[in-house]
Every structure is written in C-alpha cells, then in structure tokens.
Amino acid sequence: MSDINLHGFDAMGHGALVALLAVLPSTLLFWSLTRGLAAGPRVLRPVITGSASLGLIALLGACYALAAEREGHEGSALTGCLLAGFVLQLLLCFLLLFSRRS
Image (cartoon, rainbow, N blue to C red):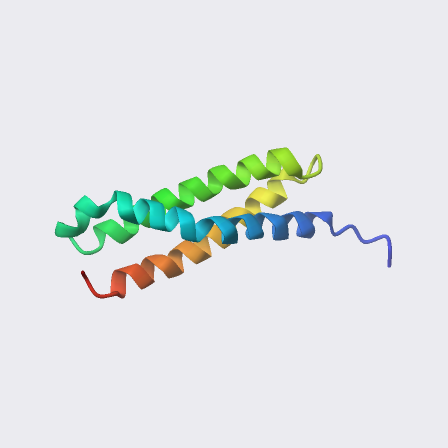
C-alpha cells in the first residue's frame, strides 16, 4: 500500500486551499472597484468581478505553486487552485447576480 504516490492529489488540495483563502478578499476588492458599473446592465458587474477575481486567484495560485510545492507538482497545485476558484467564483457570481440591487 505504500507504493501509491498521492503527492499530486495533495498538491491539488493545497491549491484548492489557496483558492478558498483568496476568493472572498479578491471578490470584495473587485466588487468595490466596479462600483461605477452598478448603473449599467445587471449582469455586467458580477461577471467582471468574477472574471477579475478568478485571474487574481490564478496568479496567487501560480505564485504559491512555484514557491511552495515539490518539483513536478506545480501543475497539480495550479489545477486544484483553478478548479476550486472557478467553482467558488461561479457560485459567488450567481449569488451577486440574483441578490437585490442596492
């Protein structure tokens, strides 16, 4: 049983944790920066906020993967970060889209 190498899954979990830690601050940052788009179409502000936040999450995930992961497992960490970040941003985008306008 000790022959199984699970370091790739471990790296994916670390990347997902980076995305989980970065999703709320980055979303709040870009939501406040896009305040001027509130008067436009309803879908514009959540989509731009989610896209910009996912880009920042990918940047943070890449920095973490290159700095902290084992050699050869950087791709797995970045994959976990992007998958978790995409799912979380999709949920937040729908939450922001269907929330009341203020």
